[in-house]
Image 1 (cartoon, rainbow, N blue to C red):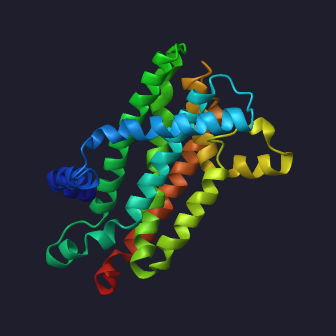
Image 2 (cartoon, rainbow, N blue to C red):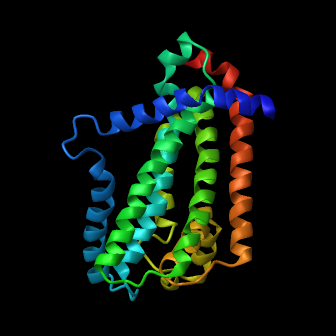
Length: 258
């Protein structure tokens, strides 16, 4: 374990450079640049709030905040896993030239997505203040579901990065999967409108637990239960363990498929 830690510390400056590169590439030639990390969730919240609050008449208090909090969680997962999936393929030229721990490319994508997550979280707080929604002390616990979500996403990202090198079709299949997952996560609708059989499926989605924990502390002045926390830790641990196992089992063959 100490060897892995020393190796990581040795390449930490490179990780910083990779994160900076990812952010620069994402907003290159953009007039507003990183401000889009604030504007994107805000604009989507406005559009979806108008559509769903008027068309479907969801009876949810502070629906724009409910919606934006869901976007903060789901958009991070989508961005982190999608970018991680192509991290090895996108760095093929560098991997072929010099030795670099390959997991750094995945970690850099997760870190850059985490920076966007921090900006989206700031946007959420600004909207809550603007709409005069009471800010409760429980907000200080919001880092727990966010941290677990980052760990969960990293596990999925490592897994996807490893299998995408060999099976490029995964990129196309995963885009369909993420679209379906969005509708199986209570981002835009309350759980109360679902039939019982669909509620079971939605609750089985790990993102639902992280989103519920996040909304509890952000909106409802409630600290999540120990049971929800235990499930969240278990889901993140299993995801990270599987991701690391698959990645390290396949990383030596990456060069043959790039």
